[in-house]
Length: 324
Image (cartoon, rainbow, N blue to C red; front, top):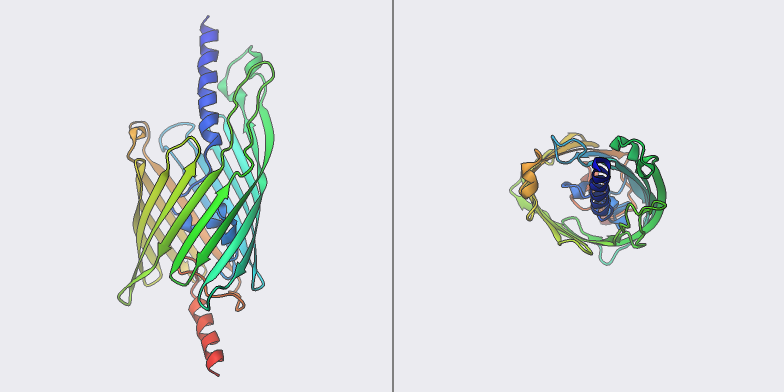
């Protein structure tokens, strides 16, 4: 009788975990560092190839809490086309899911100082459930691991100038159901379509400082609307510090440092404000952003969030060419 009750508890816990896991896509607090994860139209917007590595550890102090590792690369190929590739690995308890996607973007230029890009994302997710970690013996339901692949696509639009941006995108357009185990339904969770809307602007605060407010809305069927409101201060384009609030969920401190013209590192700490704060010590997020090569002179100057030190140099050269 004890084993039956134990199995029922594990099945309920596993179903609950998979259901919430299936409706989640990685959403970093410093989302503006790697928009290509949620919007393929972002690919190529830096004006040069950029590699980003990110590690996020949620629910610090809680064994089996969500862990996410990300590696992405994107950049322009000519004046209009951008390409990208991203690999995201999610782990929580007995579940792990690896997302591999390729991005394509095409840019047009409505005005001399603005860019409008459209993008498509295609790839899929490899889901693994390691039931053996549960340590339940002599039970066929938990006697083997489960693996499957789910293809999916996404789309987006990204508009930006040197000071302003607006992003609209969706992922998980193909709503795929997760596995059923023979003779016992383990889960019928579905990857729901997720919509993202974000915008931001850069204000000058004297010669040395800049203010960057932004927001992010995230909507998915069956879940409350998630809202991020952020603001950060930049000093001499080298040091960034700020605060972000995910309404009813968390409040975060942001930090980013430019080590060289082409290398930045970042750190974020999320303090949980919901009832989950009683069970964990918040979340940690680390990022490394590396610009590769030189910016393309065929592209418009990138939005301030993205530009490297030599963006202004290229712009000055172009202005001098026009004058001559």
